[in-house]
Image (tube, rainbow, N blue to C red; front, side):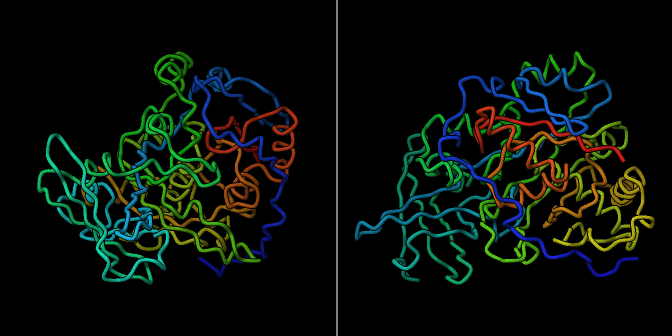
Length: 410
């Protein structure tokens, strides 16, 4: 059924545009839903405000949100020499790779990290910090366990303080590097969606930053729009620049997903599926491809490789509902209320969308896989959309304005 991927080389330069530095939103607006909203539908563009987004949707639409919660993933240590060492958490290694379980770990854990000033850190160097937590002095120690893959071993002298609790005291909000500013105390709230729940992301699913309690609890329900929440823990690889001439050679980072039986049922019942953010889209589309894998092997592992979706004959692929129904069957057979998996899916022009009918997303950096995802969704009109945003003084990137993009119906 599956052939080798038949993709032509993809050039980064084809997805470039000029982004003036002054158009990068380094701070959020005072009101989350006061941002601009560009609406793209059937090749046409209109401008609105995000607080009016319910007016752009219809009864029967279902919005899928990513409820991951950003952790304070930057930890700073100071050596006796005075050198500052930054340790940026990427993904958990031991005693578990499960993000949720790792956050509840006590006394010791190991993470894959990005270590700043690595050359100044000898293998036997013990990094230490002390912090007061509820009247108790807790000492955090860190040692470089594996230089090549930058695994860092953390230990702390308290069996009743979880790693998640510890991070709230020693960690710093991991703002994207392109914002070019230090994190402030208020970033702990503003660089977090109002519905964030599952701790484990090192970057926010920024499309969701615009939503307010009013939109979620009043505006959308009044319109008959359904909402649902799944989880994809955004990994540090999301900031990894493309360094290959052919984008297909770019190593996509693996991200952990968690979906519930309620998610599956809501997806099966949905009329039009709207992904709130590229992370929700990656999760939803990955679910479809897991259904394809289950059709080939009823007990397939939930892991979607980078180019797995490419190379299938379209006529041989199941419908959205048929594929998702296979996932439900798998969960029922194994008596699972929740399903955990990993995805490296690369969504670029040439990708055939199987689940998502619309996408809510911010405006992304030029030449990134996120721009390519948008181009895959609306074709070459991505250039028209971005030029329109630039011409109308839209704010770009994480704290910037938003867009609602509808895929053309075939």
